[in-house]
Length: 357
Image 1 (cartoon, rainbow, N blue to C red):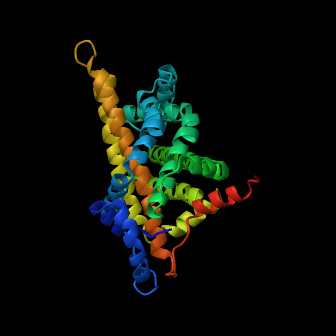
Image 2: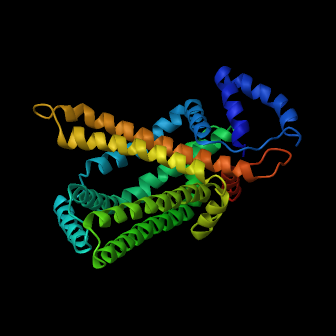
Image 3: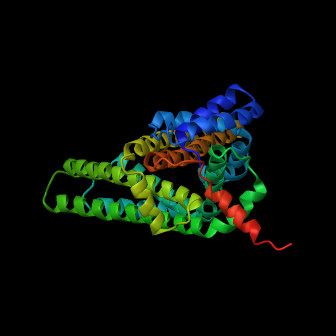
C-alpha cells in the first residue's frame, strides 16, 4: 500500500503523461525509490490533503462519480428533503425541548426556539434515515475507501472484487458504524444533560437569564470541540475497519492512536466539510423548502442542483477521510524495503483460493 507522499507524485506524473508510459516508467522508479534510502514518510496538512483528494478524483473520476450518483445522491435527496419525517412529531419534540429549556432558566428567545426546532428535526430525520445510513451510506464509505486504496496501489477498480471484499468485511464495517453511532448519541446525550445541569444551577443560584444564556453558549463551544474530535475518530475508525482486520472498540482505539499528533489537521478537515455541508443545507432550506418563484417552479431545478452539490461535498469529505488515514499511517510507519500489499488485495486472493474448481 503506497504512502501518500509517493502516491501524490505518481498521480502528478500520471496526469502529465499516459497511463502506459507511467507504468513503463514505474519499474525504473522502483529501483531508486524503494531501496530504503530515499523512501521518505511525511504527513500532510489540510490543504495538501484537499489537493491530494482532487488529484485522486481527477485520476479516477468515473468510479467516484458512479459512487456519488448511485449511493450518495439517493441518501442526500431523502435526508435534505425530509420526506420521511413527520412534522407533527417534530413540533411535539420541539415544544418539549422548549419546556425543558424554560425550566432550566434559559430565556425563550428566537435563537433558542430555532435551535430546539433544528435539533428536533435533525434527531427525527437521522432516526428515520438510519436504515439508509447503515446500508447505502455505509456502502458508499467503503466504496470510496476501496477506490482510494486502488489508486494508491495502482490497481484498477473492479466491481466484482469489491463485491467479494464487501462480503468479507461488511460485518466488521457495520459493527464499527454501530459503535460510531452509539458514540455520537452518547456525546449528544451527555451534552444535553450537562447543559441542563449547568443552566439549572445558574438559575437556582439566581443569576441573570442573560448570564445563563452565556453559560449555555460556553458549554456548547466546549461540546463542539469534543464532538468534532469524536467525529474524527469515528471517521478514521470506519476507514480502518475497511482496510484492516479490526472493528468496534479496537478500531476506535487504533484510530485514536493513529491520529495522535495530527488532530489539528483532522479538525480543519472536519471544519471545512461541516461549513460546506451547512452552507448547501441552508441554501436548500431557504431556496427549496421556504422560497420559490411564482408557482414553485424554482424547486424543479434548484432542488436537484443543491442535492448534487451536497452529494459532491459528502464525496469529497469521504475521500479526505481516506487520504487522512493514509497520511497518518505514512507518518507513523517505518521505512521498509519493497512495496506493501493492500489488505484488500489479500482478502480477494484468500477468497479466490478457497474456490474449488
